[in-house]
Image 1: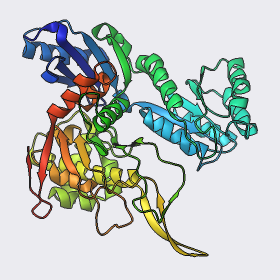
Image 2 (image 1 turned 45 degrees about the vertical axis):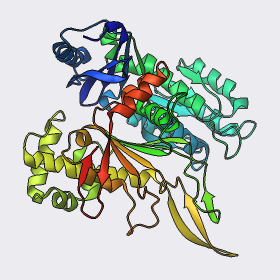
Image 3 (image 1 turned 60 degrees about the vertical axis):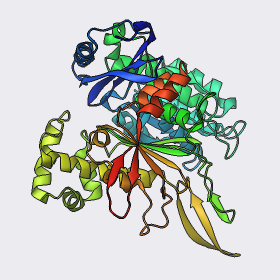
Length: 477
């Protein structure tokens, strides 16, 4: 067995499975993998113990690990609500902070909150609420009014306050007066069109580690690992960031996109500026973050497979899978009744591939920017909204449906640009890599403590696909 002092245990409490990777820190490679069902609805330790027992069998016993680090997206991650001042400005900045922190955004509100807004927020059952509004020294009235409304409500979750710095202390006092738990972070938009979302992201992650881990029951397994560092989507984002920029000893891959198809959501991460490709194209709206994540809560492969079929249309899913619509309907019912179900027949495997292809196509289309021609007083101009991903050089696919697919290329092709949709700025001709070992979350967990090992781990476990866009075939290299 490898020297136990040079091993790390990296755990992902997923929405469907708890996954383990034992990594040799000297060689930068996986020496053992295992998984067990994510028993978060009963006792999370059961699934973890099952995965650890499986790993012990493969390694000939469990060694003492130098690091035992975990991430979690169990039960779909953090349910988060954001409240801002103006929908297209501070509310949008809050939304981006929430998604970058690994949250599952379930509601976004702007302007002065009404009684019906408060009722709607309570009905969404958020795990955390992000309250912002106003640039520093700007409008203070709305954020204070919203703080008053929220403090008087039955809202029980922690609140992250990241708005106008001249109003934050008074807003914090209003929450404290009613016993609400509040964390203060720097303003997400200190100046007009200037984003500063990293402090709010950090505050959200701290709340996750302190509170959400307890709510999901993961702290009951605390003796089995050192720390839950972050939500799994945030770990994947950190892994993607490291891959793009590289380390002191290893060059990065440059601009890239990661598509992560999961049981509860489909996440897309882009690491690039996404600036307009031509100087004559005007950028509309807020500047995009270099490291951007979007999460599609209606595109989960298990917890809401039926929703994918509804958005993509049942007929399209059936046609892609080569099945009849009634048969697809029956299989979707079986998935809804057993979210831990893995494909056991050819029909189920074909349906999984069809669902994954639809989820990826929809998720990347929502993540990517768009262009359109608008007519002004000086003539027609081309306007870009969001990120231009057309020139991104690397597309990475991860998640069970891709990892276990015999040929993931037809699934991932759904992420690419389509001549029939010239307005969508999706990737055109990227190199395509598959995270066969499901290591990106592990790379993110190791990125800060062991960056060189994390980079070596990523580069040794990402497999390139040789593409043939005309024939539709692929080979892994």
